[in-house]
Every structure is written in structure tokens, then in C-alpha cells.
Length: 439
Image 1 (cartoon, rainbow, N blue to C red):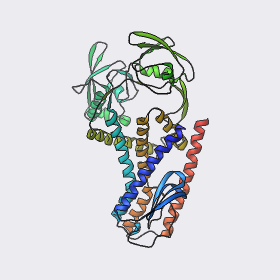
Image 2 (spheres, rainbow, N blue to C red; image 1 turned 135 degrees about the vertical axis):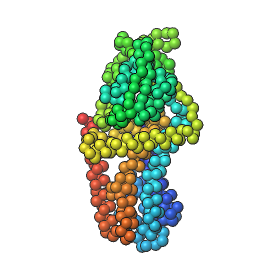
Image 3 (cartoon, rainbow, N blue to C red; image 1 turned 90 degrees about the vertical axis):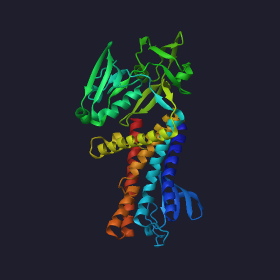
Image 4 (cartoon, one colour; image 1 turned 120 degrees about the horizontal axis):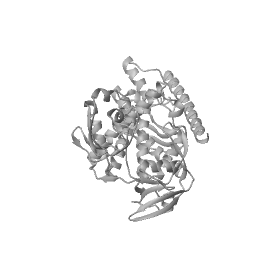
């Protein structure tokens, strides 16, 4: 039930905010709004208030605002009469504003969520600069960093937390890096020239911090809580094998779904033996594939630093820009064939599973998931595809360049083809999801 409630919440928020953008922009531009629909036609039920029909339609995972004088998802052309309150009667700038308002609202929603969660919960501070792992062919590997190195300065600036270290490295990457580390009791200077940094694929630092296996949070209803694990507990060993850090502990737990694990735990000055059976969870991998892993419902210990609202929103905006770049990169890989559509595309089944897992991890996590989906929705909607906002934008821009409207018959044909392609795409992604879940 939590999965269905979670996805219903996420989709309702995303669709409502997106269509609200179109609705408000239309009202500001003097365009009459005939229908505000959650879902695509046919209409199921709703209520009419004033000139607008607010309704729920049959095809989920989408929505639309029906504007007077516009050929759109409703396929209705009977109301196009050339009246001054119609969409087609408005100047080009008003049409562009109305069509792009949904995307802008989704982007604004992401910024507000990222910033709001950061402001409410504070910035997570990882109190370590010691490196546990360096990914091959990464910037860290080119720099010469090694596991167990402790970074003490970047370009002459002392660093005391992982956050500071990463920020300094990213900030100076284009100018070259000079990193001071403590390695086996001695100080070592490492240098990376700007040319090497500029050539690095995707600009990944490729560094993983060395965290002690100290419990920072325990999720309700998970095996850790049921077994009595508490915040502040340090996991020393699993099945009598010493645990070096949080990552090693996590790997062991993930590899033993539904198998009892004997954990040696340090609580204050007492050493305890606690048996925990990881819950088997069907997890979505980076390539959207599904695998069964073990989870016990704990998070690492991190410090939190309060941050002002303005600064939090600024960080939320920067995070949105960064994630937008990642989404565009994924789309580029799909278009150029560098990534398989089957592996990269998640449909309603997978999204529902992900929403449920984030909801179980806490409401803040579900909000962050919503923000990520909002950015994806914004970027996908602006793509020049019939039915989507980007497709409508192309039509009005072509009309503006030609200085005459495209015929209603042609617009209808474009919308019908777009709707047919969209339905086929939905069938594909649902089938793709089901094959991942049941393979």
C-alpha cells in the first residue's frame, strides 16, 4: 500500500504543479482555460467552476490544460473561433510564455524542494577527509590519491571535512590541483595539471570516504530496529569477521538477504552480540536492472550544520543545474546509442517501486525523489515531441517564422501521431518494467 500511496502523492504533485504553471500563465495572458485535467483523455469525471472544467482523465502519468483556441491532447477543434481570449489570437511571446510555464514550474518545484529540505534538516557534514577507495581512470586516480590517504589541504586551503575537500577540488579543477595528503605518517604533495583535469571523462573525482561503521539513524520497521540496534552503535565485526568501515559492512549486508548475521557491536563501553536478518529488497540498479539485496534499515553517522533559507535555496538552484546536466547527458547517451533504452528507461512499475522505497526511508527522501522526477519531467516535456510542451513550442515558433498559422488539420494530424507514439512508448516501458521485475 505504501508504494501506491507514494507514487500517487508524487505524480499528483508533479502533474498539478506542471499544469498549474500553464493555467496561471494562461490567466495572466488573458487566455480562457476550458479544462484542467489530471491524466490524458478520455475524461472520467470532474467539476466545472466558472469557465473551467477540472477533471480526472483515463490515461494516467500525465495531464493537460485545455486552452481556448488551441489544438492539443483533447483533439477538440470545435471551440476555435478566433475570439480575442483564444490562444491562437495571442502574440508569439504570450504563446511561448504559456507553453513554457509548466516546465518552469517543475524546475521551480525542484529548487524549492532541494532548498527547503536543506534548510529544514541542515547541511550534512561528513567529518572525514580519509579516502577508502579510488575509482580507476578517475580524477583521483590521475592525481595519484591512494586508499587510506588523508587529505589535509587543497591548493593551499586546509580542509577538515569531506564536503570542504570535494568543494575545493571541484572549484580548482580547471586551474589545476595541488593536494597535500598524509600517507603512512608522512606528508605527500600531489599535482594534477589543468589539461589532465579537462580531459577527464564526466569530471568524476572517483573518491569514496572512509567512514567508521557507526549507526547514525535507524529506520522504523526494519530488521535493525527489531533486533535492537541503536543510534551510536559501532559495528566491529559480522560473523566474526572484522569490519573496516561502513562500505564493507554495507557490502556484507547486501550480499546476505534473508540470511541471519551475527554482529559484534560496541555500545558505549559494552560489546554486544546482535543477530540481524537482512530484509530482501528488490532494488533498482544504476542501469535500471533489478536485483535482490539485503537491507537492515540503518544510515551512517553524519553531522548537520544549520543553513539560512536564502543560502539553502541558492544551493538548491545549483543542485538543480547539476542534475539537469546529468539528465541531459543520459539523454545524449540514449540518442547516440551509448546507452541501451531498455536498460536506461524506467516506467510506472519501476518508478512506483522507487517511490515506495524512498517513502520507507522517510518523507524527506520521498521529497528529494519528487524533486529529481520534477527535473526529469521538465526536461522531457521541453523536448520537441508532438503532444509534449516542446512539440507545441515548435509549432508556434514555426508559425511565428512563417507569419501565418499551420492548418488545424495539420495540427490534428501531428497531435494524433504524437498521442499514438506516446501510448506505444507507455506500453513498451510497462512491458520493460515487468520483464525486469519478474526475470
